[in-house]
Amino acid sequence: MCDHCLQHGSAGKWYLNAKNYTAEVLEEMGKDEAFLKEFLLEQYKTFEAMQVRQVAGFSAVGLGYKMQIPLVGRLIKTFAERMLHTKKTTFNPFKAEGHIGQVVPLDDAIAILDRCVDENTIIMKYCMCRFMSRAEKEACCINFGVMSDVIDKLPRFIPEPDESQFRISKEEAIRKFTEFNKKGYVGTIWYGAYPLINNLCACKSPECAGFRPRLDFGIKSIYKGEYVVVHNENNCQGCKQCVLKCQFGAISFNENLKQTEIDPHLCYGCGVCMHACKFDALKIIPRNEMEAVRGRY
Ligand code: SF4
Ligand code: SF4
Ligand code: SF4
Image 1 (cartoon, helix red, strand yellow):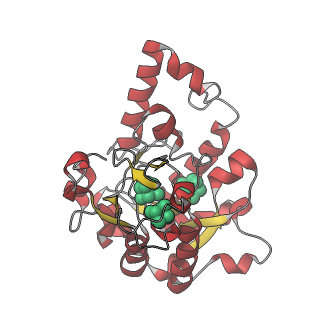
Image 2: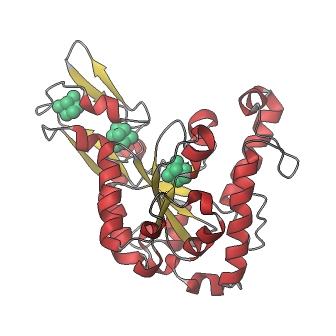
């Protein structure tokens, strides 16, 4: 259980606490929807600009090199984690303040859509990370709440050709998310801004800007899921299909045993490898049931 769960969880999971999806949490922060709309719009523009120019004096260009400079790298990491994890309510749209996420497997994502999200606000828009890094237009980002009202001001993220289709029902959102998850995209749920939840994403490496800081530099931009996968050696047929699905390099193939092996320390508990296994050899269990990774997010 992470620090977010302790404060905002329901049965240990912050993202299954329906209150975190409502205007009630905004009121507790002393903010209203108009403020948050303006903030989110500015923050979106900042994310886009970040790829090409300095924002608030910082340039993401050459980040890999900067991170390798001993003191500079450590300072950037500390600064980035403080910014992402901040619980300040004086948001600055020029920073990704309070924008932290966690990996969710299919069943939890369905529970989010089914039990927590206001159906009237669900939209599906182009993934910004794929759009910005590869000019790829793939509508797989599910937004809700205030975030959905911002989309009208960001028409480039509205899926073509039938613009009327981007507002979708709960049933349709579940169907689409399931389809993406089975395809191998990792489910992630995001605060934006803390403690309001408004994004359920279907992410792909290496494009995902949420995962890159974590995978490349160890910056906790996203938490591992509440689960970890376990392998049933008796059922495994060594077909390697699961190896191809894991975006985190947690599954390797042992040529001597002709079976796969899982490194639980690398596993994010996303569950997408299970969809690939036709032999019922993989299942996810709660992270806290495996001592080696308990409390390690
Ligand atoms: S977080 Fe994931 S789905 Fe959302 S915009 Fe980034 S890659 Fe796309
Ligand atoms: S091994 Fe873990 S991280 Fe990799 S696909 Fe399976 S559940 Fe996800
Ligand atoms: S997909 Fe299933 S059967 Fe195939 S290698 Fe992976 S765990 Fe074994």
